[in-house]
Every structure is written in structure tokens, then in C-alpha cells.
Length: 146
Image 1: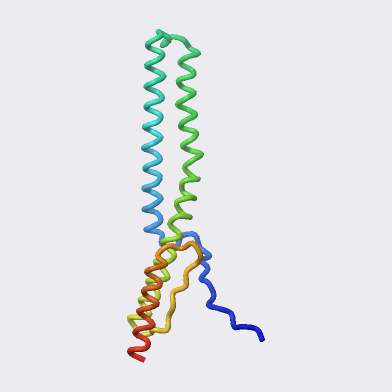
Image 2 (image 1 turned 135 degrees about the horizontal axis):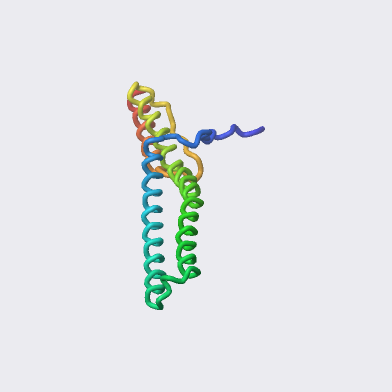
């Protein structure tokens, strides 16, 4: 005799489940990346320019070309890394935004008196303790009311 399958895990199919939260988080990550890049670029530029001036190489076309190349490489790295940061940000926020959407949906159902809802989260999702607390509350209200 086959045992009955357990509750089916919730699977999200869309990457943006809570766009305002996810966009805000990604914006913060990109801002930090931009600030770090500007800081790195400024410090490298200052160090190279200081070295060029110390050794009187400011008129040397090879040395100036190297300074310019360093700036272009750092800028190119920013352009290459930015999409990676966006992807990582989406993946990270997905583990919080998805559970928030599920928890809010169950809480909306509970306000109408439907206490039979249960929150099921995917492996690796955050807010598991909150989901368990809402499930416990729903069970308590189901036995109390029904």
C-alpha cells in the first residue's frame, strides 16, 4: 500500500515576486558597487598619478596610456560585474520576497475566516519561523472557532 504524498512544496515560476522590495534591494546593491568602484578607481588613479609625478613621467606617453588603460579596465569591470550583481540580488531577494507573498496571501485568507490555509515554503527560503508561527496560529484558530 503506497503512502499518501505529503504537502506539495510551493514552487515559484517568476523571478520578480515582490518588485518594489526586490528593486529597492538591487538598487542598494548597485549603489554600493558603484561607490566601491568609484573609490577603487579614484585610489588607483591617485596612486598612479602620484607615482607619475614623483618620477616626472607625466609627459611620458606610455605612462599616461597605462594610467588611462587602468581607468578603462576598472570601468569595463563595473559594466561586466553590474549584471552579475543584479542576478545575485534577484536570487537573494527571491528567498525573502517569495515567502512574504505567500504569508500575506494566507493572512488575507485568515481575515475572511478561512483558517484551513497552510504556508508551504521552498527549501532555502527565509522567514520559515514566521511561516510556522502563522501555521500554528491558523491551527489554533481552526480548533477554537471551528
